[in-house]
Image 1 (cartoon, rainbow, N blue to C red):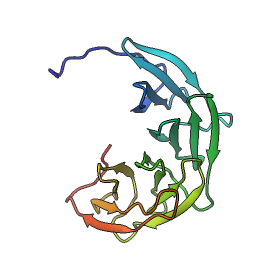
Image 2: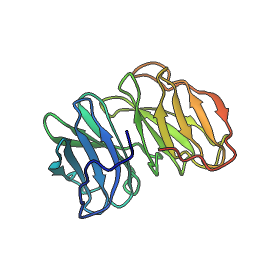
Image 3: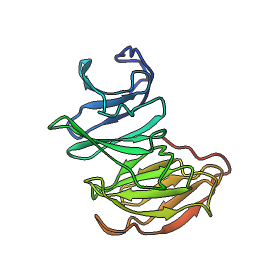
Image 4: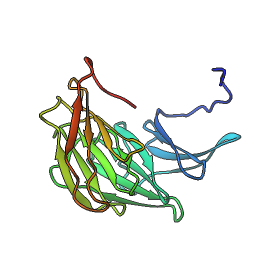
Length: 193
């Protein structure tokens, strides 16, 4: 609350993105060591690290999000969405032809996973089991689809580069995605983390 550093952890690689799950565990994508790192917060200690079977957490793993049972990792170079089961500590991966350049992701209130695709200027929706559900086109709103976050009302907010932000109606749980509800130019490059 006062801005002072409480604790720190030295990574060998290059930690890029972190997420605290519902159990209070911190998960960090370490791009340098190509692994997902599980950490306690008090004390701030590494518990374990996990590398997907195909080794596809590479220097461009840019996003991590969690639901009740999984950690999701968006992977840019291999164009895959990885799901790590936090109970069984097993990996699975999914991809959809034409869905490329995963930049980030978020998990909505229904457990569906939203992945911006910067090359396609779109946002893809996957079910909580990794099934591809559809895509919302954002190409008319900005030059990239870069980030995704969910608000308290369940809308998905996507940073679309120089176009600002778009607000997406998520549609039905486990079903087809909705559509762009509104756009919000911000006068700069929208890349919200």
